[in-house]
Image (cartoon, rainbow, N blue to C red; front, side, top):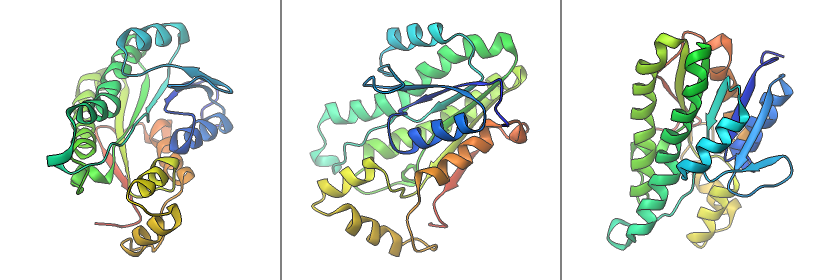
Length: 232
């Protein structure tokens, strides 16, 4: 029960890594507020690219000890074919949303002189064909994380990032469909390129996020931890 008495906010929490993270934090004692674009069973509707919505929802939550910025989308395409609106949508959802949520959360964390922020980056931050928008956004997440760690550190707020490799989620299944493959075939190809010879599971990423959100990681800040089965 390492999160007993803590309140955590998880964005993009309706499925995949976000859902697994919310479940683990709750299992370990946290009161968890799950945010997503669509309201659902225990999920609060919030478009994290909309500053007014973010400010209103976060103000309504009150106490925030932990923020997990997980919301993200993909709109894959080669540079010469990528529409501007798909570039903008991915940057807004994967990077600008984190700025907005961190800005809203620090209003509570700074006076409390405590906070744990974990941002979702990706191995794609190192570059990935057909993902110029996604790679740029996820690389930006790492810069955002390092800078916020410097700015918020004096208030005992740690800021770290987790960069997953190929994780079996609805997002990667949708990617497989877009390239004319089944999720199983796509995962098998990714596994062949991974030293552990398998793809990751959402709960494996959630475990790393939970560590960084805990007091066990109280002297870890400004870091990006890759969770990718040893892939290079």
